[in-house]
Every structure is written in structure tokens, then in C-alpha cells.
Image (tube, rainbow over all chains, first blue to last red; front, side, top):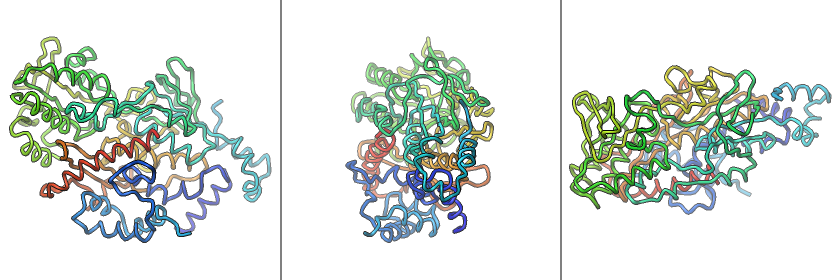
Length: 100
Length: 427
């Protein structure tokens, strides 16, 4: 896995260094997290659906893991059950607010 | 001018004798001279999302969006227009936000694709060469599949399955109807755009009838024996509309087999109806440009690679959204948007010499049964061979025994979702 990622990054830097918005924005984590923003905006839309900005990676990981066995939510349990623990970790790291 | 981006890049690297270190030190040179051209046909939830996200993923790629209409009328939530809960204006979006993302928007109709020459031909704006093409044309009606239902018939018996004038026409017909009239909805067999759509529509029309024309009746004539979120819809209909809505499935003789628009007749194998209002939702297929490009198969829809959304029938053409055969993933706006974000990253990767990466996608579809009464279906999907398959143990519909508070919340979330996703798609 690690080797694949390094290889991908290398060929990105060979081909377009600086052209892609960032390596992270076209990597596995960006792909896995792409569906989330269909409901969870980080922008200025007024919404009762929780926004993702302001959550740390640990918080997102705990929330998604908890949803897998929580039947008191509307639908995030049905979504969270589709992801492995590893995938949840990758999504959490990608979407979580980075500590300064 | 249909040079290959990959070739160009290799040539540049060779000519400059570039090593990895040199390339990294000269981004401006490469960025300005190695532009790839991507053309997008169709400015809906799939195409507009793809165009914006591709620009975000790699600003050196030149993205042209060809869309025949100056504004887009969104289908999701357009059923609420019939209930008087929304205006058609609330469904309408311009392409200013898409242009502001650096996408060139061409208002014209794409009429042909030369897949070998890698060129899209338009009605009046000439030809557009591409390195990769994204087709997101949505649906077209499958004329001829339902005897008697042709373009002229849509003026008498609106389908309203593309939001806009057809939506307004159906609403006008409902408003012109006398109390006590019969409304028929003809629902098609799978696959079709928005599987829960006909039943949400029945709910929204019933809400209007209950308030303004309570002696009326709504009959759903269906070409299948079960439908999306069926238990939840029927529970909601019982609770909110009593016996106003009657559903007749395929094996009870519900399939509409022909219509006669002049006399206003809707025929099944066993009965003929002359309703006051007939909303005929006919069989569908991928938008016709898909056929012209050679990416539709005998079914009328477009097979895709489940990782890159590239057509197995034509190299360098990707298809997503309602036009594609995404297997377990339904034909919904949410699916199209999620697929588009994934496909934009994959196309950026491919144009930069990287492989597409298998990933996981999600879908959520809300339906409104009445004010403060929402339900949902969700799913998570992974590539498996040539298919997109639902992850075992995930997804499903709102629990049938959920507390009423969940229906209230899901109606609110549905409203929020529409504003969030349209903001993401159109800016």
C-alpha cells in the first residue's frame, strides 16, 4: 500500500509538479471522502445537517465507528456500515481539522 | 489538433532532458504547455459537478462544458411543486458558478461525437476536440417503447420526468381539474431515472388533492410488482391520504401498454381509463448523444468501468449519472454527483499518467410524502469485477417502525440536502 502511494506521488511530481491542486486532492483519501460533501458542507450554507469543519480526525473516526452500531440516528448508521475500520480511518484523517 | 496529452508530456520531458528533480523545479513551464483538453456534455448534477471538480483537481486541464440550456431545472424536489410546497424558480440554477470555477461553458447542443477522431460536434458552435470526454447527458425518453406516446402526446399527457415546462404543464392540468376527478400516474419498469420518484409524485399530488380537491382519486398504474421504499410509501399514504391513492402492480394488470393522447385514453391489458389528468412516465434510455458516441449498448444505457467510469466500448470517453449502467447504484442526483467527484479525480490522475484507484461511493435519496414527512434510502457501493455492488450489511431504507420524529427530521434533512448539493454543483 505504502509503495503504491509513493509510486503515485512520484509520477505526479514527474508529470505535473505543481499542476495538481495537491497530491492529497487526487489520492485515495480524496476519492473515499468524495461522497461525504453531498450532504456535509464545510461552506456557508445554512443547514441542520452537521457540517464537518471543526471536527478533528479522532472525532470523525469515533463518530463514524459509533454510527455503525447506533440505531437512534436517521441514516448515518446505514452509511457507516458500508466502510471498514481502515477506510473510516483514512476518511477521518482526510476530513479532520488539522491541529495547528 | 487532437494530440495526445500523454505523448506531448513524454515529448516535452524527452526534449528538455528532464529528470524528476528538474521537472519539480520547473512547474510553470510544464503547467503552461501541457494542457489537456476535457469536454463535458451535459450540465446537470453529474456534468456540472465533474467540470468544477476536475478544474479543482488540476487547474492546468482545460475544461469545456457543452449544455443546451442556459439554466438548469433540477428534478429532485420538483415533485414538491405539485403540492405547492415549492416554486419551479426554486429549482432553477444558472451556470455562472460553473464558469467562475474556470470552466468554459458553451450553450449549444452536442449532436455528434467522432470517437476515433476525438471530436464533439455541436449544432452551431463548431467542433470541440478532446483528450478525454465526459458524457453526462441524463435520460431521453425511449420513443416508440410505449405505443401512442410520442412527442405530441407529451402535451396532452405530460411525463414531467425532465423538470421544467413539463412540470408546469402537469401542475396546470391538476389545477384545472374538477374536484372528484381521476389522476393516473403511469410508472415504468426498471431501470429508469429516480426509482422512488413516481411514488413521491403520487404523494405530492395527493397532498394537493387532499387540500383542494378531496373527492378526487389517484391511480398508479405500474409496470412492475414492487417499487423503491414501497412499505414506507404505503405506510405514509395510509397515514396521510387514507384511500385516495390506489397502486396497481404489474401482476394485477397495472402496466400501461398503450395510450391515445387525442381521446385521453390510457390502456392496460385489462382496462381502459380516461382520467382527468394522465401523467405518463414512459420507458427511458441514455441521452441520445450516448448512442451517437457509440457508448450505449443494446439496452439503451451505457456500460462503464466501475473504477474510472470509462466506457468499455470507446476509449477516452467516460459516462456517469443516469445515462450509465452503475448496477446497484441507483439513477439519482446524489449518485451522479458522487460519481462525478470520483470520476473527476480519476480523469485528473489518468491525464497525469497515474492509474485510476478503486474506491467506495455512497448514495442517499430522500423522498417527501407530506409536509414534515420524509423518508430515505441509502447505499454504499464498491467496484467488484465489472460491477458496482452494494456493500453487504450497509444501506437500506428508513426503519418502518421509526418514531415520527425521524420522519420530521428526514423531511428537514431532505430540504438541507437539496440546498447543499445544488450549492456544490452550481456554486
